[in-house]
Length: 92
Image (cartoon, rainbow, N blue to C red; front, side, top):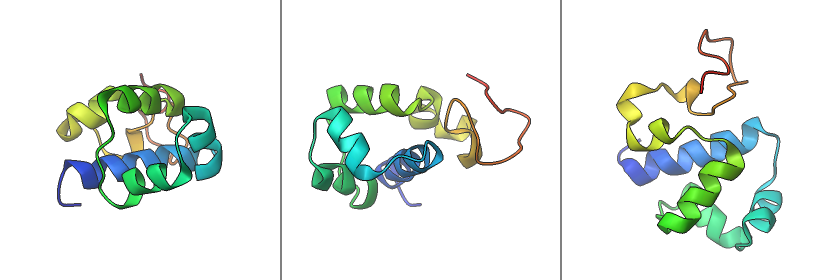
């Protein structure tokens, strides 16, 4: 991944998939269009700060994974990591 928006889109998509949620479900919960969520996930569109906050809250994304990506690996970007058997599982 080349830049912050690339990484952020990857983090959002990974968190959504880890929770077994569709793009449609998350977009409805956030009250945004499916297209907008897709643009954030795949087209490197940066969300507003207000939407960023709602996404982080809804998907239980660790703020450190966004603001300090050097401190976290891809498998622990979600507060309740279920994507692997890492020893930081459920680390908040």
